[in-house]
Image (cartoon, helix red, strand yellow):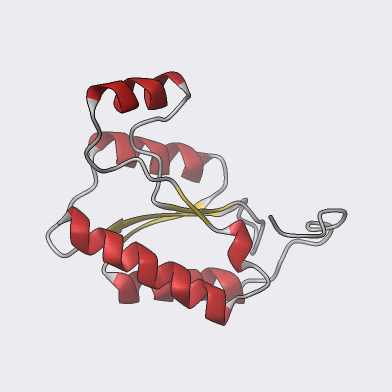
Length: 130
């Protein structure tokens, strides 16, 4: 399951680079999943890696939302309690949140968000993507 989700992640970010080139650098993925040895896992935890952080985050205001957070799943996948807690917290903070099953669902969610009007005054003084 995880391997298919990884393929969806890669395909989504390739889509973002083509469809939203100017905004694509502001989309990010937190590589929380995957197997790691005990030493690396301990280092990441100490460095602030948290369970449940959404797969895709876009911290830019649009349509009255503070940002977009997506938990991406393959067919049959379910969000963990930690993932649901993150999505709930972000929604309470004004983010648009979604659990997307499959690549098409993720693309549709991003497209819907990107069609929303950017909030006035946002993006000023923040020229240059990382």
